[in-house]
Image 1 (spheres, rainbow, N blue to C red):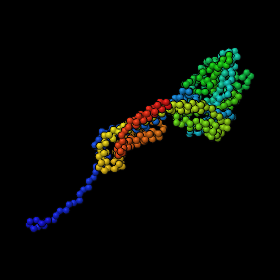
Image 2: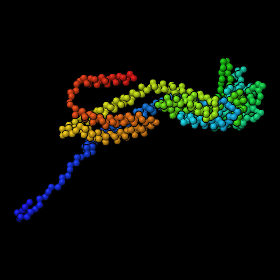
Image 3: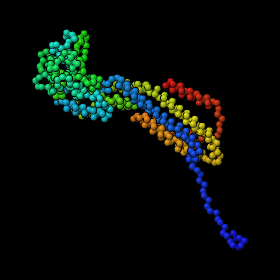
Image 4: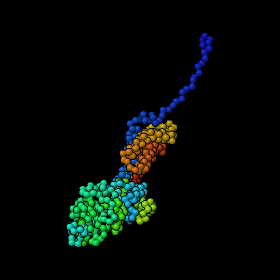
Length: 462
């Protein structure tokens, strides 16, 4: 450019203009309407929490019902009792070794409890006590006694007189210890030699060397042990008599078998009722069958070297009854989660519809300015993900922590389904704005109401 003075001034050239950067969509929208975003997050938190919580509540209820049902039948219904014949090689140490092998092997698959575990040796038949002066409830009904060896006896009783029995002598009566209450009822004195055979040898005699008191008669340890705490009343026909149990030392197993004509070793392993799970009823029944007459029993026979090992248990019948109860209650238990799921879907759909109505003008404006359907929907998806995902994760975590159960697969899947629905509901409803407007006919509403009525009736009938 030339000035009046004749000097030439260079004409300035325009520099490069700065490119316009659009504001981030998600951040702008969340800042523009923070209250709506907060309400959406709260709605997602509640619905996802309920979706994850109800399956866990149902699982906890089913497990609790199974455990209470099992406990209500008594302490001995969960016992697995293994037995074998007493041999000359049996001693307290060999019984303990067998107990350890049984509990270790079975405990790998079935939850066992130490409460109520017991093992020992018992005679098959009780013998009469012919001593004069002992209480007879009828002329021909002598009081009877059954002898046992019981591991851990001294830990559950208190010796009130005398001493604990020692090993049986080679040519004398068998030393035993009796309940003090039973001795008082039958009129047995400390030091008495109990005659159990009219003209029998010393093998049919026992001597009372000690008296004891049971610390806790309600302890599951005493289930099925005869009459350890007192004298029991037996009745047969018009005859009635007292019966009690005496206990011997672990070194007297061979003499015990001779006294009772034959002895039977037993090992009782109670299954932990508090660990039973409703979803594993079939698996538990299979394991019980295996350890009764299947591969599990074969493995037990091989590890214990007792070919005549036999098991008795009420557990299979109890689990069969529990399975029937569980199957009968399953349809009723499904009503609650189904109702909550329906309410959650309706609430999320209503929230999506309200959001669409509120932002219809905005979406129409984007459409009019050339915004593509995919581009707008992706932005709406991003907005929903940022709002919903943190709340959904928090709701799922709260359900898992506040309602602990061993099973978490179904709650997580349901929470994921609700999360996806919460994210997609608004974009899906907004996508309908691109479709041609249609006049809503009255028949559609009638069909919808009839469908809801049919579903409700089906749920009530079920």
